[in-house]
Image 1 (cartoon, rainbow, N blue to C red):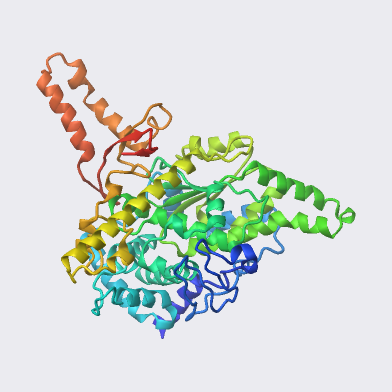
Image 2: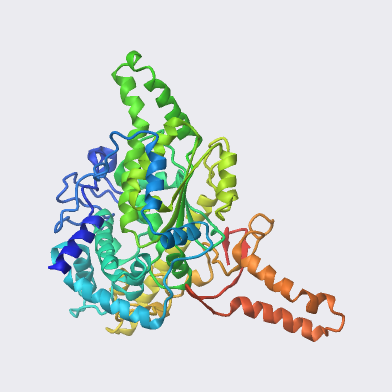
Length: 567
């Protein structure tokens, strides 16, 4: 009985309540995907995949994004500061210190991982997974069905596991919940259900790609309002920059699909070193409104002062900005509860005025569970940038100018990189399919093309059954092309903007300074010894170092100017 009560409480906390397919999904522009497949506006059966349509059934996840049980009514501008202060006061002294240090990048709350801990946690994960009722894990059951479905001429079931069934993928959820197994399982089940409902069967076969977004969704992604920055902060955390622009309304359906893609890229689908560091150290979110949003919000506030002089059209215009902000917050509220990624800090940057105090209150309500990790920064853009710098955030990368324009140079390079990586993975998977056909080897089923062809891990270590050999044969382009340097990587690029503040470069500079006297100043040092010191320094960066957050190693990366990525 206690077990059931606990499950019900946690499930209620993570419940996806009336969140998908908002009222705008009935518009003609939102009913077609990029392959021309028609999507039904019915909440019970809507086709969402691009060529991978399915009928939604099982657990009724919901209807709209706009109604997520977040009450924005009766909120005033003074509530914001009280909410965040109260969240800290509800913690004990040790918890407050740990969170405060992690927000500033001084320490990391990630659990020290050992092979024994991982193995035992995965066993408990499987046990807890079996206790979840089948009707609550529709997507999980669907993934098992897809993995066991015969492909091609063979009548035998496949033996290769879908990427979401692999142990390394489940490990990302354990890291998110700091190895709290029951919460990790519930997050895992609910996230798969959301992924299945938004993207369809294809999201269960392979990680989602840019090609799964239709033209309207891809256009919103290119607008630059939501970006993964190309460098980490001083403690090795990825940075998710939000530069909202509420001039035009964006349907919740589009927001959900684009956000899910961005988070899936950030989290990854395997336990390679690249994504393991992100999963352990977490992500920080920087919300930095653009000039257009500031203008719209202030303009609405001024119109509110003249209530007796506006008609119905003005009344609708006044509340548009607030409405769009609430809708985006509702989507963010859902994803923050479900994505397998720890959000270690949220920085909300706003002008210092009463109307933006009200906006901060909206954020406080929507992100209630993260209020203790949220910091509100009020002031002009220059003042806010200096405040962010105190938290180890590279302010040069914030994709917004002082005049409010959105910077998109890094975003364009990132999209180009993602297209290249996803295209290379598809080509490699097709070659693997030809290899399997030519050798008539039933041990390597063709279904692995559909189940894991975009996995991040070239070795398949820690994965599900039957996946290791397949991943070992597919060329791993991500071992040579790097999207975002790790904290121990040493980067070489023309200019001094990031080299002087990148954590890996700072560590390397300390190593050089420690050997400076012997290598350069001491006249008794032989040329052979100088070469040995240089080799030792390079090996020191490359060797694997056991840390409290796992096993880390560094690389020497150079910037390819022509292709705009790290090698």
